[in-house]
Length: 548
Image 1: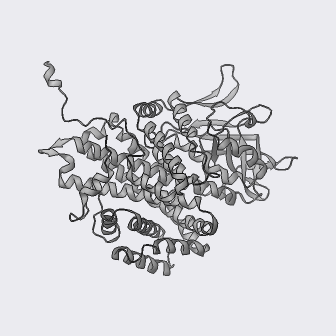
Image 2: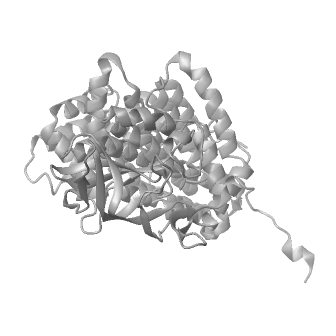
């Protein structure tokens, strides 16, 4: 066969060797907007280092390796001793080491820590999303641990450490630890009040032994887990370490690893507590949900950030491919219809990033703003989690289509993004759970709605379509009849109005105009690529383009 038949032409070069942070205008603007000026230079320097690593060929290869070689369960060692360990590809440990070293489990005690961490989480999740799970769980466990000061004194410094230590040893002997969570059971799922795992008190105050089975245990290779179980006074939160203070292994039997649709690099497991599993109470007996909800809220925000990261990587790949690929007489990016698709994808990505970063900033608020910002989080986090995670899958699928058949091939990386895309809508409570949580906040916490209306009210008068959407939302909120059946609609409208208000305040006029027209004004179709042709679509696409 003649060699000329194998000449490769009209193929886009790989999108690699770039700074994931600095080439993301939306993210860099958000960091500048939400960080105090005295924190900005150091934060930007750290994020540039992380962004350059995330866009490097090496880290991209680690992501591919970690997913091609998923974790394996080893229940016993060669001598027959039960060890219940999970083996990972070396690439997984390299990814975790880099992200923990960048401080992505350390936000709670650092000025501007949540904004810096959220930006870093968005960056590192783009080359490989699976290792974000233990980062998220460890970060989110801190507020729950603080319900028991003696435990927090021991575990919080190790959880927020910038050192990744993979071996299982007592916490006192480790420079850094990872924390996981085990809430759901097979008979209840998100209805954790039906949990049957039993906690029996021991003689020592705060110590128990557990008996039961957890259907989903996140990050089962971690050093300890926050677990819900039924104590004599009701559902209670416990800390279950893998290794006890004397160096012996706690009874923590991993029954199997889940064979998941995506998220292949990360382990999720079923675990068994055999009646001798030692646990330490966290918070009061019977107040387990209250204790652990701080962790759940933080991981829900990470679901928003994780979806925003997938969206950003998908649109970056789609725009990059279209800039280099020629068809029908010119570059795809110059074709009016393709430009409409790319602009619509870029719009969805920007709205997700701006919303996620605004919520991260609310966690950093102090002084007179702290109470109002906490109230805003109570309603905005479940609404954002509901909407952003649901938009992720159709958006990534459309971005894959921009690459045509090339996008359907594993080597493009797009199929891995697509398999990952539904995950965040399922974890930490699926869509109905989030929508009902929004309703619960509306009914029981008036300050949450007040904070939300104040936030969107800051943009009133700037765009008539946004103003009309706010008025429509107020009409819906005035009638609580049949609200449960309308909960999804309401969560969607809350999220869209909040995104619109943030973009009107902070995004370039062409972005805000496009969002208000298509998402709030009804001048857009159900599929991506249906923006009004009169908009400045070229500006939206160029804003999302990665210059390499």
